[in-house]
Amino acid sequence: MLHDSLEYCPYCHTNLQGDAIPEEQQKSYNATHFTRKIGMTTLKDDRILYWQCPDCNGKWSIK
Image (cartoon, rainbow, N blue to C red; front, side):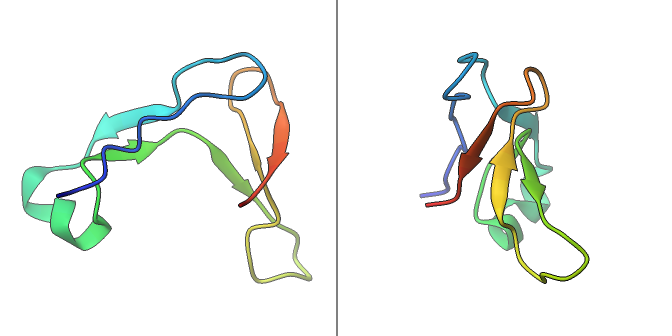
């Protein structure tokens, strides 16, 4: 079963589920939809440090 990436911003509660992934590519992403949340990093770090909401700019830690 593929993950539908339905989640909400912890601050403004907007839906962060993005556009549908083309069906032929869903298995590669292991999901049915893209996510709207933004993975924030720095030039120094080669990993996501925290998430940010594209609507309210709220920030929260990765889990």
